[in-house]
Length: 412
Image 1 (cartoon, rainbow, N blue to C red):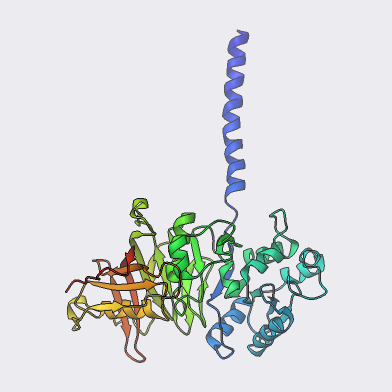
Image 2 (image 1 turned 90 degrees about the vertical axis):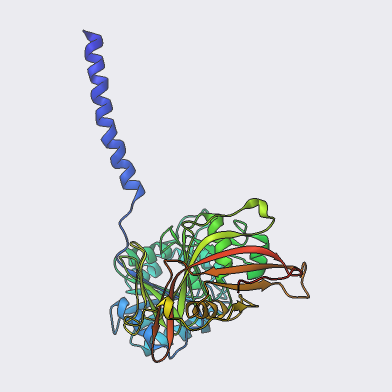
């Protein structure tokens, strides 16, 4: 009888234990989604780019909104931070400088990062702006040596969770993902040598979440190519790279809108594969898309909405008139990748080739990489009439090592 009672007691205890464990796990795994927005700027944001500056002020609360400027990344924080404060005030914000930077003279950045009054000022603002420079300085200034968040970083997160805007340019964009480029090599050297945790890549601040990798200065520096080795290293399926003087605005529902001068590249590695036996970096079946200004992309549903100027301009593959081979001898050059994608979309051919080389006066000058862009049944293009601009979705991208001495063949 006693054994029967004990058995029932143990069963009851186990039944009670399951929901308690589940409740504890749920409370520690999924914090509430932030209610705020991100403005991720690709660097070199011009003072006259009203579309981006005004959007930051609007998301911070409109004219008179308090915006905290963190010059943490800058080599010369005081004048750089003061300039950004001035630009934001020009567009109607009540901006103020947060004197927190590794390079700020006569200042102990670790004490400043945990100053309760400064943290309260940031917490009470409607927005935060991280200036450009070196992203390693941002994490050094805001993250304690034990890896925990400083009081100021906690305040930034609280502002973001409660509906404020977190903006950042260049280095301030790099910290938006949970992994960032830290001390990267050149794009070509990254293709050749890969990335190492703690050297080329390191933890970012992760405002956009753990599932999207972010890079900046993208088109003018050919950085789309360095995103792929980093994404493969860390297991990312999606990456967004934003060009200079342009911003990605990400709202609380993770809908992305491109604002400003140019656009962004979306890298999708969902079905990508690599061959370790090939003897060099390679990837097959990656997917690359170009999102132009005014375009929108939903990171949750992975759906695309063209800008109003392109809504009626869907390109028809069978209507293309060009037939000549599409080729780039410097696919890592300024805007080369987008120009090649546009030319291929307007062409009867289904494939284009781009080549990346290290240059003659570098080690292993004979080693290069071939980038093959292919139209598939999922490839779609949109064009606006005046001024002419394009949005291009779902081109296949394959990359393989190439001996520059061998002959290059193209399909004719």
